[in-house]
Image (cartoon, rainbow, N blue to C red):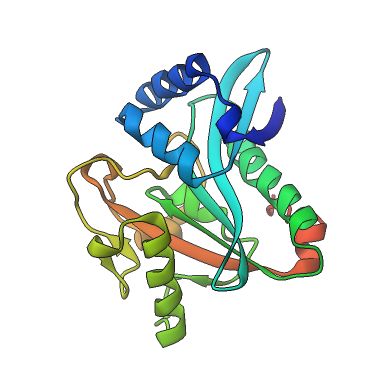
Length: 221
């Protein structure tokens, strides 16, 4: 399995068409305009292949939000396969690798729009994750949720206490991990029933400490 990252603006029309067909196969009905937006708003794209076959992709951004270094997940998807878990972890891990180079010796906030327990499970390697089970977030933590909702362009539909994006007119550009068997009961209960095809999503985030980011933030086995 090979994982690479590149500038999203370098994607050729044929490659964008392939990604469009891929998300439809996964089950996320995304219009072509979503990919135009992804390229504009997320400078990186991480792609996972095996034997030249696409297994997953994730648009991402390494940027500062209010001065804080961040890894932001954009539109992404993982196909159903025996390597679905490795694909998801590889996509996220490649952004960690890039961030360790871009933000040396800095703690980094990691955030994304999700709709499935497996995607939420990727936050378990982080600290101070929001939302999390049996925890009432404080004002600053809710404020971070609002900042991220503005960055993702869904703040008008965002509930800062539930950390969820309400229904909209189109599909929400989540990291789609429906075909990955990860998460457990706690994550399943927390995420609940979220339908990105109706514009719904959860915004989750956590902090990667500098020393752990340098080690690649390997997920627990």
